[in-house]
Length: 442
Image (cartoon, rainbow, N blue to C red):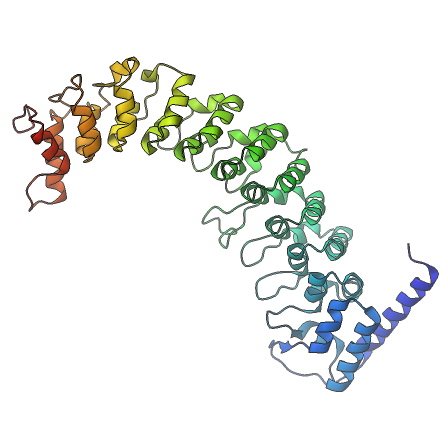
C-alpha cells in the first residue's frame, strides 16, 4: 500500500503526463515509418526514475516539437523496441506502470522479432514488469490473448521464461494460463507444418528439474494430459538427454507422460534406438507394457534395438520375455531377421550363439525370406558372413518367389547396375565360401 505522500506524488506524475498528452504540435506524416528513439530517453527509461523520465519526455517533446503519442508509438530502438519494451527488459517497474496506465495498447505492440513487452520481460527474467502486464490482462479479461501471443520463433512468453530458466516468471505465467505449458513453438507452429517444442518438453530437454516441477504442478488439475500435449513428448526429451532425474520426476508427478507416443514411438522405443540401457531399465520398471507396443513401422522396442545394433539393450529386453518367437513385426520378421537385414553383426552373432534362439535361425517371414535371404538381398556382407559360418543356416532355402539367398543377391545387384557384372559384396562372399548354388532359382 502506498502512503498518502506516495499517492500524491503519483497523482502529480499522472497530471504531468496528461498535460503532455494534451500538448498540441503540428502533425508529422511518417506513413508508418518509425523514427529512432531519443538516446537520453532510452537511458532514463532503463533507470526507472519516473520523475526524470517525465522530465526527459517534456524536454524531447518541446525541443523536437513532437506530440507524446508520436514519441511513444513511432520512436523505437533499432530492433523496434518501444519505451515499454525497454522498461520491461530492464525491470523499470514504475515507468512500465505509468506507460501501461496511459497507453494500455502498448502491451500488444511487437518489435521486429515479434516480441511483446511480456516476451521481453519473461526472457530477461523480470518478474516485476511481467506481473504488471499479466495483472492488467487479467483485470481486463485479456490474459489468454496476451499470454498466448507468439513471436517470430513461435514462442509464447512462457517458452521464453523456460528457455532462459526464469523459474519465478514461469510460475507466475503458468498460474494464470497453465494450458500454454502444452503449446508447441517453432516458426511454423501456427500452421502445424512441423512439430515444435512445448514448455514441458523444453524444461525436460534442458534438464531443469525445478522448472519441470513448476510446470507439472501447474497442470496438476488437468485430466488426460496425453490429449493436451502438442509437439514432442517431454519423456522423449529426457531419454534423449539420458536424464534419469527428469524421468523420475515425471513418474512421481505425472506417470502417464511415459506413455505418450511421439512420432509413432513410445519412450522405450526411443531409449532402445539410442542404446540408453539405464533408461530402458528404468522404463521397464515403470512402464513395462511399453515393451509390447509397436511403433509406426510395426516394430517392438526389441526390434528397434536389433535394427540399431544395441546389443546390451537387446539382452535386457530378452530378460522380460524369454521366447523371442513372440516378437514378430508387421512383416512376420523375428529379431534375427531385423538384425540381419540391417547388417548388425554383433546382434546376429549373439543370437546365433545362444541355443535358446535356435528356432529363429531359418524362420521365414511373410515373404518366405530367412534371415540369410534378407542379409544378401540388402547387401549386408558382415551379417552374411556371420550367418553362413553357422552350419544350421540353410543356404539353399527358397522364399515365396522360389529364390535362394544367392539368387536374391544376384537380382539386387542387377537392379543396382544393369550394365555391370551382377556381383555385390554379398554374392562374392557366398561364392568364396563355395555355397552350392545353380542360378539362384530352383
